[in-house]
Length: 107
Image (cartoon, rainbow, N blue to C red; front, side, top):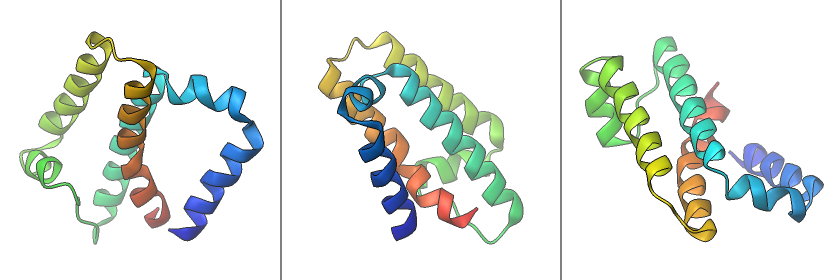
């Protein structure tokens, strides 16, 4: 976990603030984080020995991958329909990318 956070901080520091702001405020960042979370969750659950930490997503996965993916698609649709201010979009993106910080070290 510490290595992942250190790598993330290093990447952000190297890219510069002028580059970070558009990425942090982009709706495409939200989509990328949702897709990456779904992919890493799928791989980790497929390997066994890994449990979905989010109780809502765990309940959806119990009913198969279609409800899980449908929920992710619904989240993306809502974010695209919602005209969020840049600071609010940044918060959406940060929350959407948090599961990757949990998943990546287990890959």
